[in-house]
Image 1 (spheres, rainbow, N blue to C red):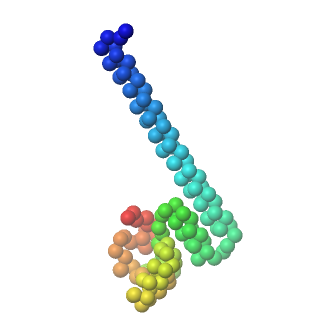
Image 2: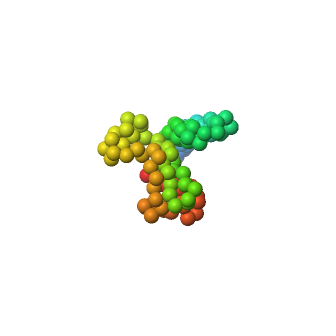
Length: 137
């Protein structure tokens, strides 16, 4: 028969094993979720790549990119640099079509095609660096 100290040691060892197993199962679950998300990303990039190779139309490419980003739970706003390098033109916005229509009706202008002059850029000046800008929520 085990004395008190031996019993405590056995229980502690089994509890530690139980925690290790629980942590291992949680880790495997997290790894499986990450792998699934990475597979979705790879599939999305493949669809965008296919679109790049099959269409010469930038609007169609942006729509495909926006759709794939939405599939990854990412919203997108794409504005392209105008040749004068002094403004951007909104070419894609990944909000629901109904919401976009409602916004446009409220403000009285079309958001898609809207020109944003350089002096109105409040987040940063991508025109100075001619780089993509990524802004988090």
